[in-house]
Image (tube, rainbow, N blue to C red; front, top):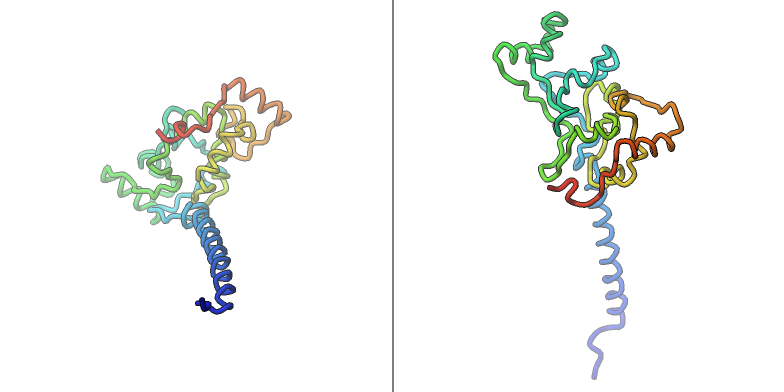
Length: 216
């Protein structure tokens, strides 16, 4: 029987198969890069806000404690966004005629809320409780970075599942005394390993990595 295909067809077939494998691998790699990019995760992206609130100025500059504005962070799963009345506690006296604070004054006068763009926003299918993390000795900066150095707030980490699991698998790398949870730039005053072992036992830290821990 006569040969149907020219010998060169074998080379073409091999090239097509191997080329297809490399093409699929390349597309997979590009997809992985895209999935971990700031476009998808929101990491280090600054969102436009109604008022350019500076955490750097209020925390590092003025020494205001996180809990003054985020009042429910120790008791609730949600840290809380301060009402305009909290802002006006100071700004009815200081900077009370600045143009950039006009939205605050107008909202306060009308009894309205400022529509902030939420920066650290977990998906609806993820359950996250601020209060339990505070009680277990996880500092604000573990998730939110050095907020006291951020003139404009940004998402400091990817907040993807792999990032969460890194802490859940080894919380000793991040744990600190409860009284230091709100301290920015905290450094342990004792051996970090022995302190971690003591606090993990004292605070009964066992976060688990089962799906049901975060997906309820």
